[in-house]
Image 1 (tube, rainbow, N blue to C red):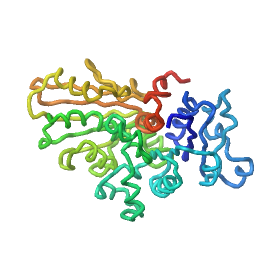
Image 2: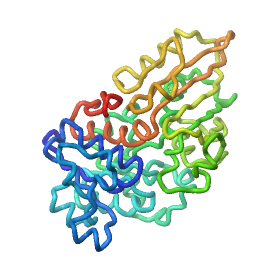
Image 3: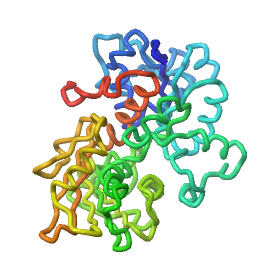
Image 4: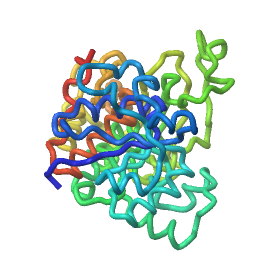
Length: 361
């Protein structure tokens, strides 16, 4: 698919939805065909043709016609009439479980930003408590899903009809660990510790007691210990057992960004050069991963970009390593990675519309 593509977004009201809207509206290969925005619209707004996009996200106001765009009442008939080729679902998991199979049935390709279709094994999906788990339709749909991490599954994404966009924490940990585990140098019996910290936007837009300013500000808290939903993604994509990793996420009192500090032990002595070579060879051809050779990444370097930044240091023995992985949870951890997947699915250059994000006003 290299012709001009008609996209649609359901779930534009959330944080990731806002980032996705901005990326798609400024995407050079989508000029002249802005996304269709669909969602819940009450009777009053329906009477005026939907909710103006700039009322939902005033930051999207500009001189490129955005003021005329609206979130329209969702219907499959409307999407088909508008000729939608590719549907982004920035929706809750259960909604994506219902709508992704329907879109596929209607010949619409899907990029799902929820956790609905990321996990292959039912034991790992159990944490979501999906109501349709085990049904014929759910099983058939899961078989079509491709885990949307281009650095691991680029070739499969090209022809995929359903791409399951990875979780933000999962992206940061998988990219740091996968090259080393695949190279066979990590002592999995010794175990891995992944300590991840995310800005408050990672919890979504709906307010909760733990994302309230009075709770989150000037605070740092662990949550989801031994039970976070992204753990299954780590196990399946890195290729390890639950007994071989401890993953603990933390809520960081900043708006956005993730920093994962990962502790691993090697089977044999390694040098900085030998580990660096593994990373460089693994990510050859992956333009949105940056390897820090002489320093460690920081959130401020990757926030507002679609880069995943990875650095590491070894102890004097060469057998203990600290890996540091940073990314923007709303971009490389959500909307930016979704657009990266769209680029591959549509035959565009992988970095199109993503390389200059940090320069956007």
